[in-house]
Length: 227
Image (cartoon, rainbow, N blue to C red; front, side, top):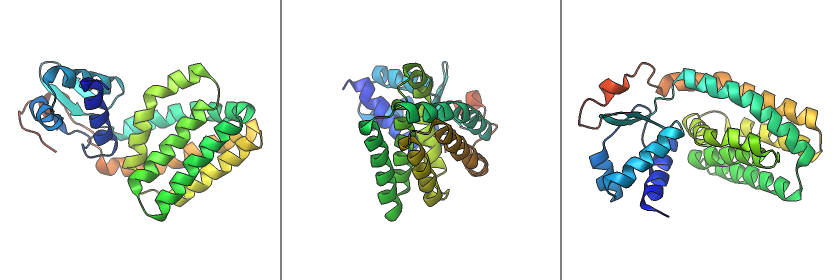
């Protein structure tokens, strides 16, 4: 793994798991020292994160963690309702034993995480379930469309981890059963309902932690890191 990729993976994990919070200033000097890398690979890592919507770059001033406002959450749910319903329909038509086993493994990891009340692990397992759902749909173009959303979904699930994890687990199980039964219509219906049911709860949570009116230029004006 290159130095830039290592910095990218480390910062991505810290943003997704909310160690670096929405709107937080990213000081290159501090990050380079923390990660023990030079500025060049760090800047490459920040560009990769910006392409995934996790970081905002302000030319000549620096970077900050993307605010991820309620408006961002609404946009993400709008896209998810269409694409994940399609993924579920295709998965029910095309899933093989290996793909179904991967979905079951995600659900089992989520149940184990719920049992020990590990919110970060719950979020990761749920994000993996949705990733695998797209993978087993067997549609390369759909996978390409969804890939840039993977990090945002993981971040969403982590930021909204106070939602009822038991209910989410039940909904995943219902969706899995429809896919395993080879019922495209029922699978799409469950996927759409599952995404739609989480919209209002996620928006309500988002209003509590988001930075709605942040000015990236003003936020990157100071040389000191601010939360």
